[in-house]
Image: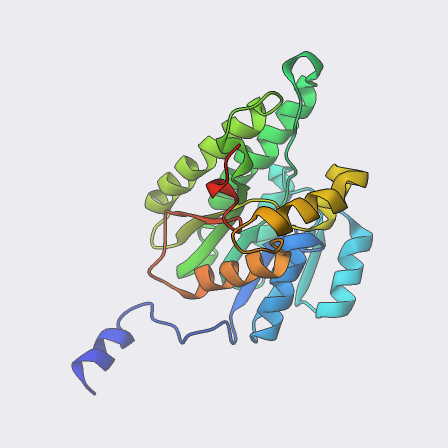
Amino acid sequence: MTDRETDRESSTYRPAGLEGQTVVVIGGSSGIGLETARRVRAEGGRLVLVGRNPERLRQAELELEPQVTAAFDATDDVRLGQFFVGLSGPVDHVMVTAGAPAYSPLADMDLDAVRRDIADRLVMPLGVARHSRDRVRAGGTLLFIGGTGGRRPAVGMSVVSAMTAALPALVANLALEIAPVRVNLIAAGFVDTPLSASLLGDQLESRREELRTTLPIRRVVGPQDVAALAVHLMVNEALTGATYDIDGGQQLLPH
């Protein structure tokens, strides 16, 4: 055996790709989570799917044949802990896509909704990290989804901006605290998902057309684009503690 082969034998080296690896997707029944789950299956990975909506989760189960599904709200820390304790073996990666941004000017702000948003965006990732750290193999990944939109101050963006600033710091600190498990963040701009459609309503098509004509890539970013980045962050074991933007160049545009 060569020196290089010996080094690999004594490390957490894994073959490229997801063949035979187990990926937990929290928020895996729609949008970015569902598309990432499809990509994981296409690359030979095994799936554990978690979602809040039992019906959407059943539809994803029929399509993807995951090893395990679990319908619950991941902001319920007790249930989240029970879920990870109940897994039958170690996992390679955990991806969290759950949570929707809360846009509201101060005068109209529902503080109970803000508390729920903070729980979705900050408290729940801490719970996932705490409960999963002993179940994820060395060199595996915790991967969170955030956004880029809150980097530009605007009326109605107070909470979103605060979460946008907080998540990269949270991820960088977790990457040190739970190493050698890796922790990364995907910061997405506009992504053409059912969530975007529900937020924009009848303005959706005009927003798509605006992005097609103004983004440097001349098209709208889709969930498949984010899924491809997510899988890359899972399999590249040199990446941890960082935030990876995917917005088609949207941040390069003037206000």
